[in-house]
Amino acid sequence: MFVAPGSEPSIGYRLSRDAAEQVARNWWLLLCNGALLIVAGFLIFSIDWTVRGLATFVGAVFIVQGIAYALTSGIDDRVRRANVITGLLSVAAGILIIVWPSPGVTAVAIILGAWLIVGGTITVSGAFAARRVLPGWWLLLILGLLEIPLGVLALANPGATLAALITVGGVWAVAVGVMRIVLAFEVKRLPKDVDAAFSAPQADTPAATANSQRRLAATSS
Image (cartoon, rainbow, N blue to C red; front, side, top):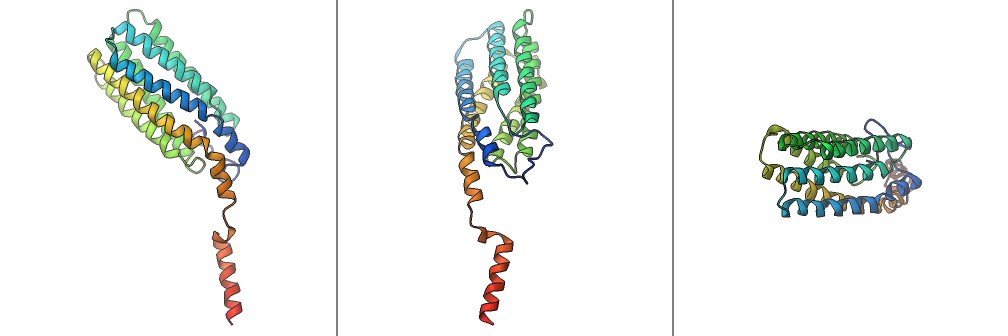
């Protein structure tokens, strides 16, 4: 997350060059995280899992996700703290799944579903907070909108079969992984987008256009 829900940059909805570079430094982290999620998704689909094995693997994915969240910087210290808290929650959820004694499908489904809903809600809120700052904010929105229904699906029938749980976990990992890779390249070019915005011809502004029209009228009169 790069902008905390309810926060606004203090520079009139536009990132400064320094802030853009700070956010752009996260691009490789997003790229690696997305690639690992895609690999994890394919592993979830391709292995003949036991409940214990799937719980351990999903827990490990949550822990890696949490570390990635905690290392992600934003445009200010408040965002940084929010990322650390989100990361710690993800790590805690992963540890809970792993250490749960004799985890059943119901326990794994409840933890997985609850975290997907919480994480998706945070991502959607952050996306709307970033819509005037980050050009690729809609990618964050899609990420959140993918996670929430998958979480609801897992919680709607927590006593479902292991195959259903594998489907939810695999779809989530692959879909979110792909979107994070796309977002990584959006974030990487953010400083260039800021440079382009600041170097845009001032004649495009309403005030400059009005001044041009007045000068034209004075010339013709």
